[in-house]
Length: 150
Image 1 (cartoon, rainbow, N blue to C red):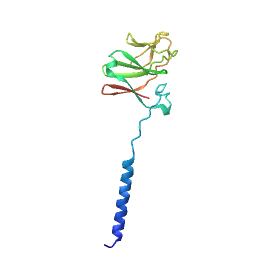
Image 2: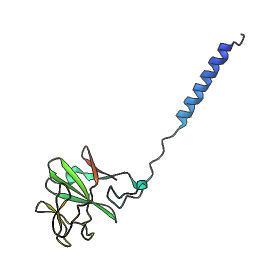
Image 3: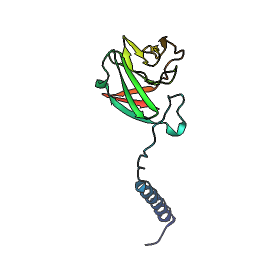
Image 4: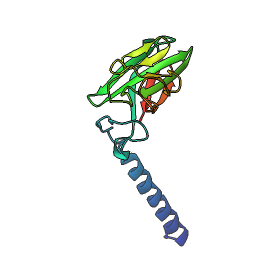
């Protein structure tokens, strides 16, 4: 059987396609790398530490209350549910003196160190010595799971 130009071109295309498919099939999905959780609010987090952290379940945070989730020794996140199905996340570090807030008391986020109070929906200060709002943390609800996006 004589070799024609058409046969050579078709064979070259087929071989190139097979090599390309083999190379794609050989790629292995990289293993996720464990990272150190960030120690700052979303605005302060270094780019190399950005990611998401599973905090817990929506059932951990009752309506009108808040729950603290300790990510590491330098970051504690307070998740509030000011209204049914509405979740907010803040750095639990009080903006007055850096104490960790105690939680929700009388419908406000309370800091036990110096009496600062914050709005559980916005994190804005409403009483006491704090002048700045709590650091907002982006929160995503997936089904019944709460994820902090940092």
